[in-house]
Amino acid sequence: MKQVYIAKFEHIGYITLWTEENHFIRILFGKNFKLNNSTELLETPNKLMQQFLTDFKKFLNGKKIEFDFPYILKVTPFQERVLNTLKKVKFGNLITYKELSIKSGSPNAYRAVGMACKMNPLPIIIPCHRVIKSNGKIGGFAGGINLKKILINIEKGANYGI
Image 1: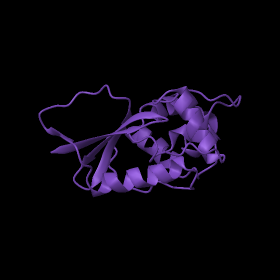
Image 2: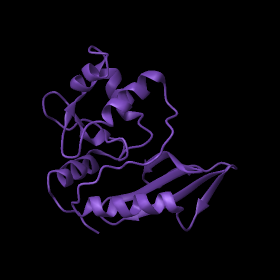
Image 3: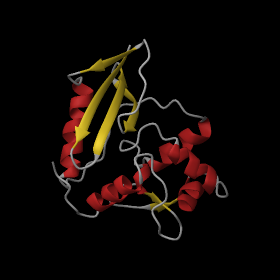
Image 4: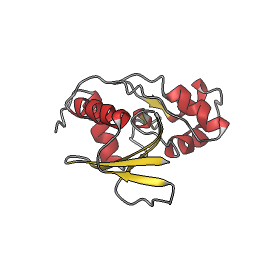
C-alpha cells in the first residue's frame, strides 16, 4: 500500500510525500491530489519521510543538503537518463537545459530535456530547480516559478528557515 504524508511549510506551501515501503515514488507541491483505494493518508510520517522533513527543514535554514534517499523512478528510459544526469548537479550549481541535454547524451533534445524535468516525479531529491534557460532566465518548475527562485536562492545562501 502506498503511504502519503502531507507537510505544510509556512514559507513555501504544501509538499506531499509519497512512499512505497522504503523508498520515495513521488513528491508533489500543493494540496490538490487524488488518493485511490490503495493509498493511505498518514497523520504521522514514516521514518523515511521524517528524515526527509528533517533534512528539508535544515535545507530551508541554509544548510548544504544533498537529498540522498532511496527512490524508484517510474518514467521513460530517456527521462530516467536525464534525471540521473540531473541528480549529479551539486548543491549551489545551475545547469542549462541545453547543457543537461549534452551531458545526458542527447545534445539536440533540450526541449525534451525540459519536458523530462517537468515530469520529474521527485523534485528536491532530483534537483530540477537547478536547471535554467540558456539566457539565464529561470524557466518552469512544478512547484511554480516563485518556489524555484526560493530554492535557488537558498542554495546561494539565502535563509528561508522555519
